[in-house]
Length: 404
Image (cartoon, rainbow, N blue to C red):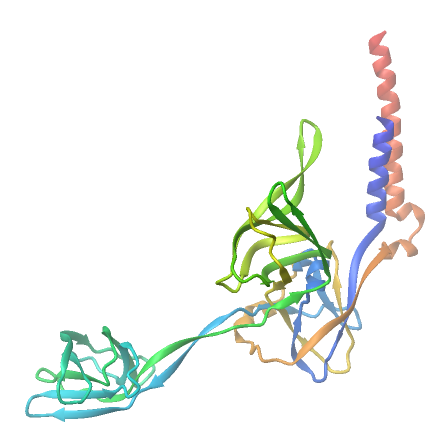
């Protein structure tokens, strides 16, 4: 009993006297102003995927406020205009818009840009390949005019059955209101702007095939625990369809006994007809096991396996000529900076700085060197140890007296 108590206290004293921090240098500051700094997999691993521990300090050890920036895939729209002709027929009270679809693209809608209006109209849509014989697409549809509060124009999208006519005709009825002023006609194309992910390197793969269980296990070991967000397989086989899963090693206590086990965290399918790119749930591990079901097939020839993180940046105001360092300290709490309230106003196209020479520091408590022994944590724990010994001595004596 006494031996166990002494061991626990010795561990506590060691943990208190020694702190494990990281420190790196910030380089690439060629001008004063706001900069964007990529948090590399090395930095995120050192912070145990908890950026509450991250700080930027200037040469006087003052904190430099920063704000986190996640760059993810964004969807952008581009407007493709079409050539059109407007015909106002005052006699029949009809405004005709003929849109030229010269490449005979398949269309099921058009967006019309027009001057602001609050009118109410009915319209008909038809299609033709020669502008002579027209075929109906939509008849007697109701259109309620819209207006933009801060603009002089408004956009309205009109849908109709999918078609590839060379000409599409809109006919607006003007009997109850004045004609519309059509400024542009076209379609919006949604484009995804993909942000390059950050590749995680420095890992080893051990490949083991179990013929009895008909499985292949890839044991992936990183030099430090990593936050893995996606992975990609490059497989040489021509035709395959295999179930697979990711396992991580864990421990659990059963009847005061600690035993290891493997926890399944993700299921996926490897398919020769896809790119075999997979988005993963939150995984922060030093080692993962990828188990592939082979059934009666030969093992897959995996040429390459890559792991990635989504890019994560900090934006901060840095001065040219000043020296800065990035630190990671697990005793720190989440910082509260004014800068976070202005995150939306920052332009992401900023000059980039970088964190280099990130090193692990095993340093004693900074203030202990300038303190007397009785002021240190070691003295405090020595007092606690002595108190426990004294209390244990009197407690054992009391137990003996109770037995008598």
